[in-house]
Image (tube, rainbow, N blue to C red; front, side):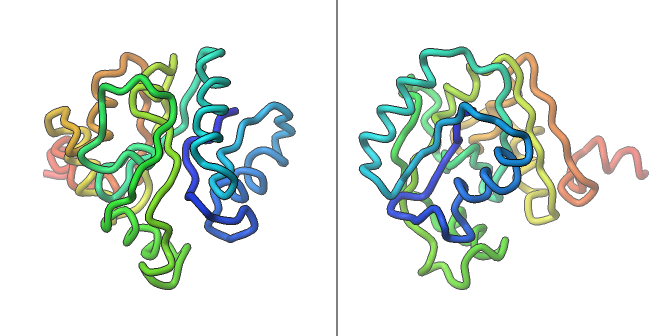
Length: 187
């Protein structure tokens, strides 16, 4: 299992740590033994290279992703780099992404949200044999519409999922509320 993204200079024991989240809710309950974390608090450039090399040594069977309120895919905020073949990038989080973290209750204020993260690249996600995308919440409805019904563009990073031959997207009623198909079925 490869970790998608993690804040830089961020402790694993913080409630918003993605490492902590994965350990508590996925790795320990499932018994997964072979996993690669992005330890963003320990030489992020070296971690990016080390985990990236491991990622490139094995094909990705399935990528589990979501869509951010700004359309981000992992922490690839707009405009995302659709071309790089680097497995992981060090990215600067935009304000919309950081506000989302506050809105989800992980931080009390935007000043507490880290400004940088290590993120899997868009191209690496797209190299997966299968992609499963889960997007709950009304706050993501506009991004869902842009990414699933709009053009494929780095300004709506998750829009690239439209080009993958084996992507399944799971939406709840709230996140699907602005989709044309959803509105047509209610008319």
